[in-house]
Amino acid sequence: MKKGIYTKQNQALCDWLRSLREKKGLSVRDMAARLDCHHSKVVRVERGEQMLDVVQFIAWAVALQTNPHDVIDKLWALEMADQTSSSVPSWEKSVAVNPREESCRLRK
Image (tube, rainbow, N blue to C red):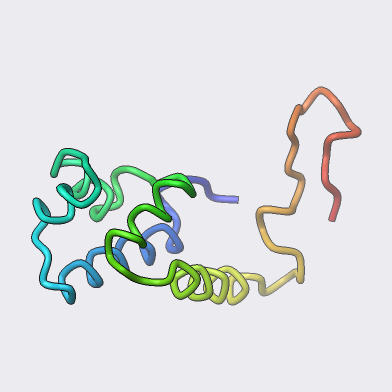
């Protein structure tokens, strides 16, 4: 599983956030003010240089006055389209909470 900022799902999220901000007529600085953060963070996230955690993502959705389920549904569709050889989502394949404990591993 590819992790982090280099996935097409993350790029889709970044594109969606930037597009929605622009559609709402908000500048980067306006968005930063709504999020109570520095404008450079908004730029880094929209460029795909920094990821958001779930709590931050919800804060962005609230700041953009949109339903976060809209983008989650789109990201889910992207993930499922990538599953050509298996019906198991990529994040469920051989994920380990603690690699030393066999009982923690999820199986296909």
